[in-house]
Amino acid sequence: MAGFKVTQKIDDNMKTRLQIEGAMDEHSDYGSIEAEFTDEVVFDFGDVSHINSTGIKHWVQWVEKITADRPHLRFVFINCPKAIVDQMNMVEGFLPSNSKVQSFKVPYYCETCDKDTVCTFVAGREYSVENGQLQLTIPDQKCGRDDCEMEPDVVEQKYFRFLKPR
Ligand SMILES: [Zn+2]
Image (cartoon, rainbow, N blue to C red; front, top):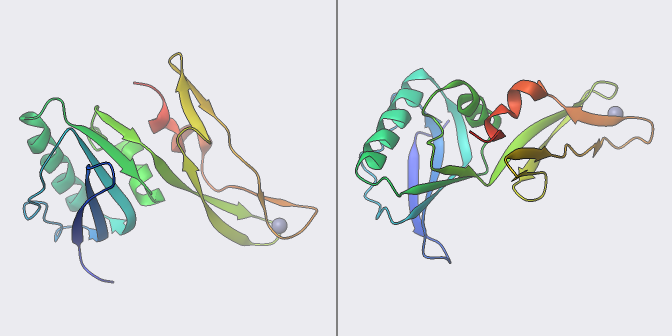
């Protein structure tokens, strides 16, 4: 598997967008990122293959460092795979407090057919926060047969915990 890579872009809204690819592990070096940290930074985790404990530590330390001097900086996370969602749920500081998860992946599975797929949940579509309450809609997925359907292959109480207003 390819190594760690960060590609920097300025998106249509003039926000800094950082696309992270490969493994977030002992080789993940955020020090090389020379982004202009404006008011909002978008992180695209869509091509992260896996993450290990050293990668988690590098990430948390780097996020703490860039936010220390910029208390108004906000983060938007998009395309978060399960590996990243698991860390958001388990690791204190992985998801900075000034952040919003715009989209993330949910694995689905049909036991009857032994088929799986991945579904993308998007803020404002599958989930939103209204009056301090999380509104979550978990859509069914067709598995190709009429008499069964795919269900999320996660423990819902745990997997969606990071969405709860803090
Ligand atoms: Zn099925």
